[in-house]
Length: 168
Image 1 (cartoon, rainbow, N blue to C red):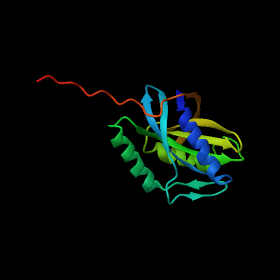
Image 2 (cartoon, rainbow, N blue to C red; image 1 turned 120 degrees about the vertical axis):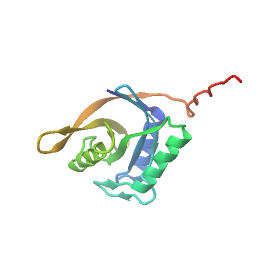
Image 3 (tube, rainbow, N blue to C red; image 1 turned 90 degrees about the vertical axis):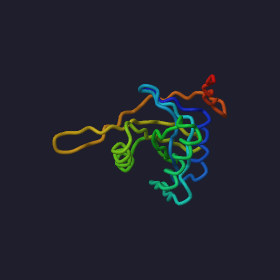
Image 4 (cartoon, rainbow, N blue to C red; image 1 turned 60 degrees about the horizontal axis):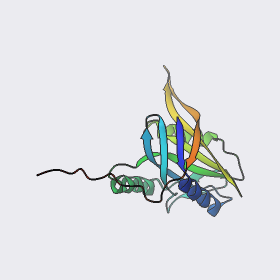
């Protein structure tokens, strides 16, 4: 799998991360699935009731669900939730035990979700994992596999699908 990350989205994540540094910040990733690949073209932040700490971040889940629904509707069903992102200010882009538990919880509801972490401070670098549930006889566990990220330039406004013409 390749994770295609819009340069505009990367810049927005870095701005959000820098805004609250040294506290963690985060949000949700929106885009498309194309075969195994994921194309991230939009994001949302933490929401107004989110909690931010030095080593943890708790999003405003209700607000984020509403934002996912709005994005889906506004894009005529093109934009979909792909996963979560958050920052590790003055840290490294590695998943903590809490990050793994969060990805496992998401993977129980969403097929192959992403967890993208931007780490750094003056410069931010991204790293991304795809989560999957691995079931055994006695329990389920998370498999989190690192994914290749390719940053691409995109226009500010994606072209909408043309309306299908019908003849009368």
